[in-house]
Length: 193
Image (cartoon, rainbow, N blue to C red):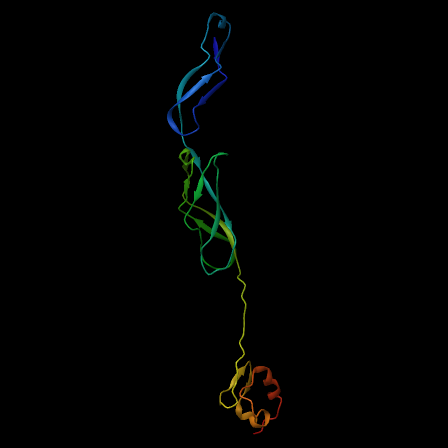
């Protein structure tokens, strides 16, 4: 005589010891099956142990910001349909500098959520890579002003203009200042002595 069943189920999917298992669809087979009448259902117990959960990280590229702070997206090998929340301490680059494929270190990984109790975390740390790209740098310049009445000398590159080179009274008797665009004209004139 042989016995088979069509289904056997726990009352829920969660991890625990000594969980009830319901068995149904029991039937008999074999040469002497006709000599017996069997029950079609029964129960037993069994354990569900935690599954091993491995957390991985995917690095997110960033623009240089003078810090080692990084960003990652966490994922895991959880069973489809389970609800888990993955988190970690702040990921970091080894240094702040621009480069491609830089190592990102991720530590302090934790798992929470409805189904967290059904897993054992296999790793509390991991690593990945990401790029740090150059920041955009805008250079601006301010135009200095030279007062004819002063003895100050203004320098732009290698050109120098001083009060002693020209006669301010002749060129601009009423002027109080000359801005850089006017210096080219002044430099083209013959010094007065």
